[in-house]
Length: 244
Image (tube, one colour):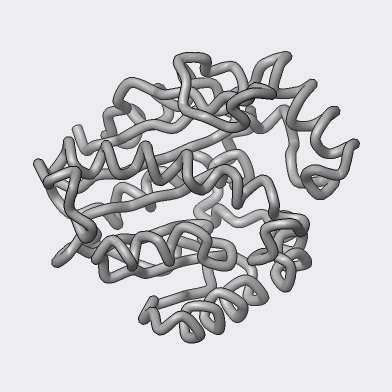
């Protein structure tokens, strides 16, 4: 795991890679098919975390009404749009202009008002968000401490952060890199196993910038269940974070 010390967090080659996928992002059978399958799993965890953090009714359909949400590394808006439908005023940030263009057009087509911005979260000066999410992003950034510090700066007092990332294990190397990419389930070059972050490392990184990690929940895969929430952290995990 690399921990650089520059202020900028974007790796230009990573932004370019995901920008090339922009036009295909909303196709559930296209290059981002795995993200579409991952979406309901993330949302199940998010909804439970939102209800637990703010005491909202799990039966309510808009628990984020009156709250501001920031999705960092938003891609073409696969999470930003559900957050808006949950009632939040949403801002989405991504390093690839192509993604922002597709995200903006798709939201407008669905009648959603989402503030999409292209840039580095460490340089945009964002603040005051009740909910900050960043899914499958930290493994792609150049400076992990600077990135997490920028997420903290964007978080309002008493706010909630939710992060997800692949774990750096033998299982993730075999299934996510050597398996999924070679089989064409994920575009080649998407994952760099050496940059995956273990839960222990993420906890230490968060603590170094004044954040506290909750108990991680695994995102596992099985032939019967597909992707699902699990106690098995070996492949991927998702976690809540609050300010210390």
